[in-house]
Length: 158
Figure 1 (tube, rainbow, N blue to C red):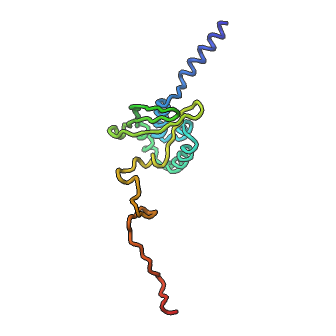
Figure 2 (figure 1 turned 90 degrees about the vertical axis):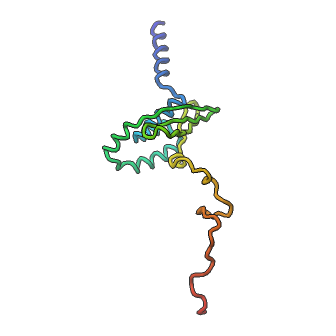
Figure 3 (figure 1 turned 180 degrees about the vertical axis):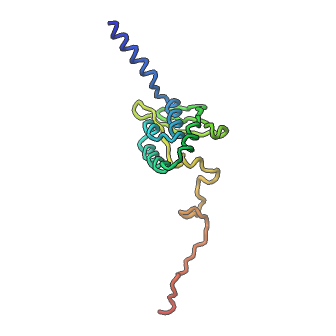
């Protein structure tokens, strides 16, 4: 009976050490991401986020050791986490830009919180007024750009 009680207590202690709260997941993911530990970040990521991290990992393979060492110094502070059902948004700052408050999206899949990070998140927020294409804009975003409808070949010699 005593060994069963010890086993149950050890189980609770182990479960307590491996917290899967949005705040813990956000902190661990951001730390791994900033330190270029993409394998660690992937463990806390959705499938789409894992794909993006794989691409980033290939791009950062040539980062110098001195730059990697500098990145290891970056720390993250989670300011707040707002949870609505199976979605959460963590607001945070990092030591490399402590005045800029940023957001990280998380989703709950099954009983596990995972980071949902996209190319848009990577590029940062879209400046005000740039999030919608003006009416009449073409696919390049050029609004009302004059279009050259003349033919480039000389057809008068036919």
